[in-house]
Length: 195
Image 1 (tube, rainbow, N blue to C red):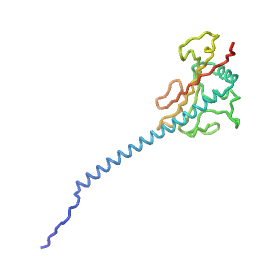
Image 2 (image 1 turned 90 degrees about the horizontal axis):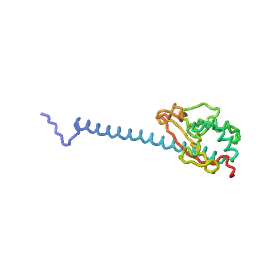
Image 3 (image 1 turned 90 degrees about the vertical axis):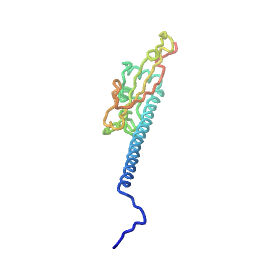
Image 4 (image 1 turned 60 degrees about the vertical axis):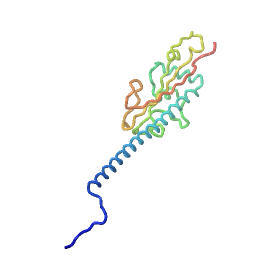
């Protein structure tokens, strides 16, 4: 009679299945980590772009001459109302870019203005809110004091969270929970003659 003899051990089907389950659970954890890392990277990169856009507009406001800032203050006649920067630049024609086009919202993911271009997903919108400094701080000054001519300007940038790219985050009154917002404050004097 013929006899089979096994000198080495092989893996049973149960051992192979357990190994596959362990491997699959490890791969699922790794893929979930990759998805979270991708979301975090998107949020960090888009936040950097938003801060750059806010800083750019804040620098434009700081670079205004006294006359331009007085016009700016008058143009935004309703205090504590957000004005998109397209309105700001249209009302202040002297603040045009070198190519003659106003810097308007929205901006794409590289921070380029979409003036006369087709809107895409994940757009950045900028707005400005201006108020008297006394309103923001709760302090009061006599009308002849220099502090009464201080203005508090909020430069706000809104953009959609990952997965909500088609949202237009340009409503700065009722801020959407699916949008991110950056607020950069600027304080300037307006129309003070020093008398």
